[in-house]
Amino acid sequence: MTPETHRRLDQEARRILAANDRGGYTVPNERVYPFQWNWDSAFVAMGFAMFDEDRAWRELETLFLGQWADGMVPSIVFHTPADHYYPGPTAWGTRHQPPTTGISQPPVAATSARFLWERAVDRSLVRDRLAALFPKLMAWHRWWHETRDPDGSGLVTVTHPWESGRDNSPDWDAPLAAVAPTVSVGALRKDNKAVDPSERPTDDFYDRVMTLVEEAKALGWDGIAVSRGLSMRVCDLGVQCILSRADRDLLALAEELGRSEDAATLARWIARSDAAAARLRAPDGTYRSLDLRTGELAPCPTSASFLPLYARFATPDDVEAMSSLARSWWDRLPYGVASCDPGFPGFDPLRYWRGPVWLVVNRMIADGFAAHGLDDIAARIADDSAAMLATNGFREYFDPRTAMGLGGHGFSWSAAMWLSWLS
Ligand code: 9YW
Image (tube, rainbow, N blue to C red):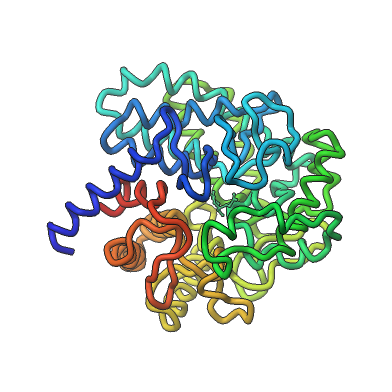
């Protein structure tokens, strides 16, 4: 990459974060997603940390304004009204202030807080902020480990595809097929009017996911009742790995802050999920999501199948298997890492989480390979990611065959990935 391109990407990434900044939080993209999204903000904070530490901490602090009394941190905080997104606060019916959804998202925030802490120019200036955030992070992790794992199995439950952040992944095909739609919401959708519908989930998908929202509403959004009672209960491999990694990062922060009791609790949670991980390994050696209602593993590997490396619970055999899998995908597709196995019959290089490449997932996968000494794979993922941005801009996601940009434009987390990882 020429120094000129590098400068151009730096400027553009900062311009995008500034344009999407709503003062204390950042919208992923104004046109499609006009509120604060949970894991987007955790990644965006890493981007801000490269040039404005104060703003980076505020991103996380503002996210936790949406935290529920039971510790749950919602997938979306609707800080200010906007009528061009569906489903908005009324459809969720959570009655929380500020208005929020009733489900969570992959818990990246503790990893982000550690990133901010370790890169702080002067840690003494941000220690109080970390100390104030810590109990909130701990409460969220407790919610995952207790409310979303009420039997203490070591595998946490996701009750809605949106909670995984990988909305229409093949991981959800069978669990969602078992949900009988009771609503028809196609006419209410806004997303498929803002971007090409062929790049968005189908109406049938929306009917089923909104049926789950109705089920949770009928349970009064009670944490344990939802956890045990919804017609979808899956251990999502992405959430399981991201939580396990975030537990480790939170443990490091607990030690920094001298919170030994919390550190011991985190160590227990980590040991328990590490012990349960083998239940997610398919006979072919790849990791998959697990349908907790039927005991079935997901039909194919996805980009989440590499995240045990990022979580740090992968065994040496797993490392071997994952590097072979990554190389085999490059034999079929020039740009990594596709969100779904290219050999899977339902692979679709244009449709959201059924094929396209997402940069935030690439960052986590590259981190995992690098941590296990596979620097060549980590470097190739970074090179592919930078090439996609340089040739097609800060799009929401990318076609793994051509690097063509897809979904929304001027995406905050793609900008943050450039600033904090690729630049
Ligand atoms: C939705 C904001 C979100 C991401 C999700 C992604 C998509 C659609 O956009 O969700 O309506 O929430 O799948 O991971 O957080 O960028």
